[in-house]
Amino acid sequence: MAKDKDKDKDKKKKRSVFFIFIKVLSIIFAFFIILIPLLLGVVIYFNSPVEGTNYVLMENDAISQSPDGSFLVEVRRGETSQSVGLRLERTGLIKNRYFWNLICRLNKEHIKTGTYRIEMPLNQIAIHSILVSGREVLHKVTIPEGVTLKRAARIIEDSGICSMEDFLIAARDPQIIRQYQIQNQTMEGYLFPDTYLFPRDYPAERIVRTMADNFFSNLKIIYPEFEKMTPREINEKVILASIVEREYRIADEAPVMAGVFLNRIRINMALQSCATVEYIITEIQGKPHPRVLLYQDLEIINPYNTYLYRGYPPGPISAPGIIALRAVFFPQRTDFLYFRLENAASGRHYFSRTHDEHIRAGQLITKPSWP
Image (cartoon, rainbow, N blue to C red; front, side):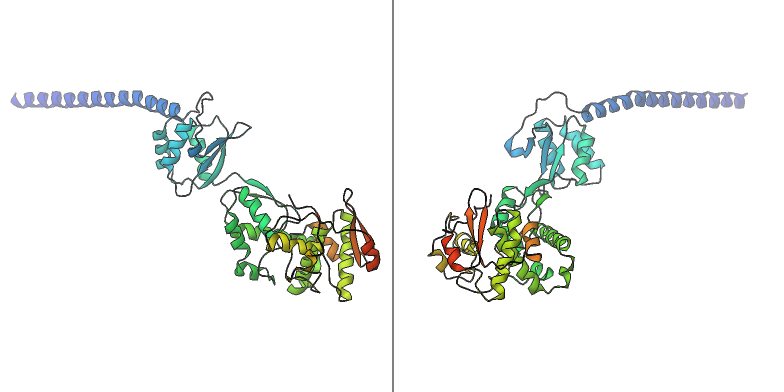
């Protein structure tokens, strides 16, 4: 009998434990049934795009709104994801920076330095994906034909791509100059004038190499056989093209001018280019661009003065474009030795065979300064 009672007690105890287990399990299950939707609700709420247009743009936050309504968000060098989240919350692009920090912790990809375009409305996960993608906003910068190295550096700095100083240092880097087998001390003339797309704070060395690669790519299109030429022969062509670029105003006159200069070279006559004297005044002496050259300007003692020194100047004086480069590789054959601006409005030049005829043509008027 005692044994039977013990068995009954064991059975009751087991049933009791089982029922307790079921109750605990039910409570846990119920808890998760309630908690999971609650957590999902919290995630959905904080991850959802910000409603409305009450954005607060502060100058120090490096977040700006474009005319099309999108936002440009700059991730600064060395900045933490938490700092970015704080700025995004303060601007009103995300609802909660703590949820942003959670996303950043769960995602192993780091936010990358750069400027990114965000088109609202976007949720936090989507914004985070943009900032870790590395696909920065590219800024357009146009380098016009005929600009000097210093002027190109100023344009690039004004566009926020890199500093003028860094660009000029890269353009004078002996290693880069040797890489392209250039016989000058700078990349003057070898950085192709074109429209480029660069991100902000782009390395100056990469900008210079991109522009130089573009130059030689275009040179190959103009004259595929250029690779058979010596560096000296190429350099002479580039120097002459840089002079033609600063002299011509109408495209069909560029090959004629190139022919004139080559005629002078052949008879050992000075090139007598106003553009080289202008280069001395503006780039070497640092003076304003002259509207008219005076005869005293033609007497400036400097190797770039092609009125005083025969042959080619020490290096290019500007960035030649397609028209000028094609002109020197395919010059027009004439017996002209001189030219002078005939009509400032039309840009036409008067070409002559003798010095007397050239003198009678009038005063020396320079090409207007580049933009």
